[in-house]
Image (tube, rainbow, N blue to C red):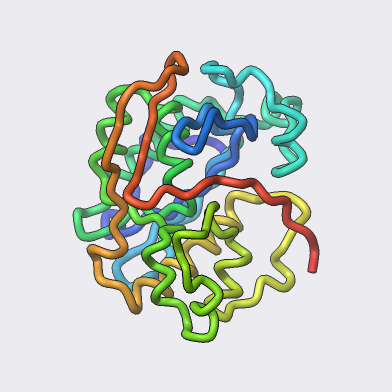
Length: 250
């Protein structure tokens, strides 16, 4: 897909749903995330939940440790270094286009992400200081927040009676099954950002029906430098460990 950072975006955007894949699967700990984006997808939606547009890009290597994609990451998402070198777009143009879309989100809207605690750090590591300012100022929703589990159907919620024992973000297929939606026919051997973004939207729409705005809003409570050069550290109110899990066909 060709980047179009100067194109006219839908002015009635209220939500942007984002998913991304990274060049490695290694993290220093659950607060420090060294990954860089190799694939990004987003969906723009209006206040009624109508999808206004969908975008997906592969990104050519752009430094910061992303010179090639590790074998372990390729096993997760199926994207190789050769693939991004041949078909990828200029990352700076893609992030320009993405941040332009993020600017459209009003303060009563959301940037919606699965596993925000991880992906917020990865996004910040990939953006310029000016882009980070826009990203940081946008209201965000983490559909993986443990606090939202109380809104699950009663028979499902009993599985998570002690939320403190949950040590990782639930996978998207797990979350969809929890709200009674089937992933049959949509599950692949590798992760696909566009499909993950669609699933993220479906889960957000479920929680939006039951949760108040304040419950949906993700807030960063600490941000500062880490011991890793060029990497920032993030802690949210309910940090969840990230574990990549390969999808298998049903």
